[in-house]
Length: 165
Image 1 (cartoon, helix red, strand yellow):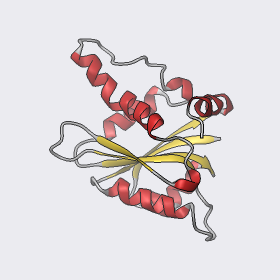
Image 2 (spheres, helix red, strand yellow):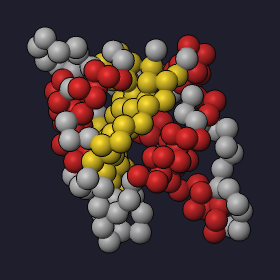
Image 3 (cartoon, helix red, strand yellow):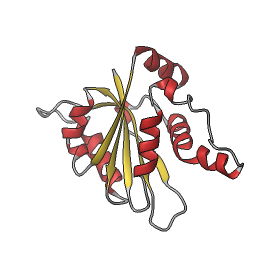
Image 4 (cartoon, helix red, strand yellow):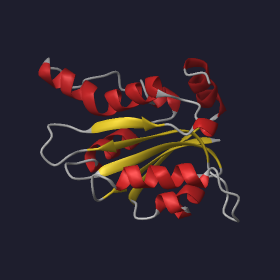
């Protein structure tokens, strides 16, 4: 089972620090479960900026999705609603766009609500093990308000079809 996990941090640089720890945890041979990620990205909102920024984090050995996935994801979460509002629409996007991949409105709305100026989020496409391992790993240290969306086999297959390795 693949999970999309978003971890919130109380400062702008927290997600970048956590991304480094998650990347290291995938390369260690300690007693802790090795985190196998399909990709990860950091999002942050500088205090004076008009909106959030994001960047994929490259972990060579375990990246399944790249900038295309993250652009679609963050664009749908943060920017399409703004475009829709500027055009006078009540919604900026097709509500089922990410839901078909197992990323429902609750996840999207919560993520949008909790990334505010001065904070950051680490978003991890976790292939193995379950999200609890990420939350208890060094990558989860200092995180608040975790969000989890679990993708079933069909949603996983669709994801890998659209965003192949």
